[in-house]
Structures are given as C-alpha cells and as structure tokens.
Amino acid sequence: MTHGIEVGRVAALWRYPVKSMAAEPLDRADLGWHGLAGDRRWAFVRDLPARNGFPWLTIREKPDLLHYRPWPAEPDRPDASPVLVATPSGEKLDVDDPALAAELGDGVRVMKLNRGLFDSAPLSVLSTQSVDALSRLLGDAEVDPLRFRPNLLIEAVDTAPAFPEEAWIGATLTVGGARLHLDRRDKRCMIVNVDPVTARRDPGILRAVARQRDVCFGVYASPVEPGPVAVGDPVVLTVPER
Image (cartoon, rainbow, N blue to C red; front, side, top):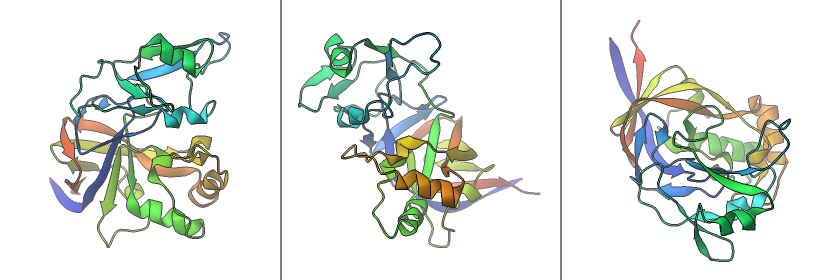
C-alpha cells in the first residue's frame, strides 16, 4: 500500500539544450526516460590528448558559455533536432553550424547526444526553500537558483523544513502526468560559483555549500513514469506504507 501527500508545486522548469550553455525556461515539458525532452542533447568537445578523460567544453573552462542562449524552442521538440543558439553578439546560429564551434575556440566541435549528457542522473530537483536557506547562510545575499542548473524548482509547503528535497530521498514524486524517484543528494563542484547572468565567479558559494551542506545541494532524480509536467503542477510525495 502507498499514500500520497502534496508537498508543494512546481515553481519553475528549465532544460539545458546544450551542455553548459544558458538555461531554457519552460512553461511545460515532456518528461521521458532520459529526462526532459531536449535536455543536454548537444555538447561541445575539445580535441585533447587521449590521457585527458574529460573532453567536454564547460563553464569551468569557458564561463561565458552562459552567454550563449537557446533561441527559442518548442517544449516537445524532438531530442535530436537542431537547436538555434543566440550568441553574445546577437547572431543566431544552428548548434551544428561550424561557425559556432569556431567561435568557441580552436579544435572545438559539436556532438549530438540522443540520450543526453548528464553528470549523474537525468533530473536535478531543487526547492525554493533550499535557495532561501542558502541565501540566509550567505548573509541574505540573493542566490539565483540557476547557479545550480536544476530542471525542477519546487516551492514546498509552508511546513516543510529548510532543505525539504533531501527528506524526500528514497520516495517518489508525482508531478503532473509524470513520476520520478528521488535518488540521492547532488554533490556540487566549482560551477556553482559562476553567476548565471554575469558569468563572474564567487568562490563563497561553493565554500558555503561545502561548510554547511557537505558539498551537496539539491537532489538527483530518475523518471519512473514518463508524462507531461508544467509550472504550477502539484507535487505529490508517495512513500510505501509499512
């Protein structure tokens, strides 16, 4: 037997059509077995010696990737279809246009990833309560949730603890027409130091997460039933009855 408890609502949805480029805000999206449709289906790689096991061009190496923005796209876009990217100069190029790769650096080329390129799991879930709690830890500095590149930002109910998504690990969330399993805490790296608007670095962000949250912030999740999700959808927690 199981029972469900409404624990919040979807406050925002984002996908990242090109790894390490800017987020694409969505009102609705299709959630499939490999995450949100169109999420992280393209990435740029650098031609590096074989001994380097991380060929991807990311915010670590090039923070101004955040100034390259998907433009615009339909939520149900096929995963493998080309993406239009707006460059910092305002030019709009197909993601697979050689001119875009050339602009990003010597020896850079694009790859299409039909199942997406994820660090650990297809979905990242974060709550507004966690963002607010981190802001307080930083002396009430405003924290943009996009520093953490979540897919689902959830506004939990008023009675929720400061970091509610961590309490949901091991349970299942029903969101709109989809269900997802909360797997584990999301261990963070230096990318969270990069401001998603200015691309400037603030090492105090990761230091605070390391000191107060064991370098973890938000949680990873995996789809267990595909379906549509939308901003405003109720989020229902399902836990097995003992």
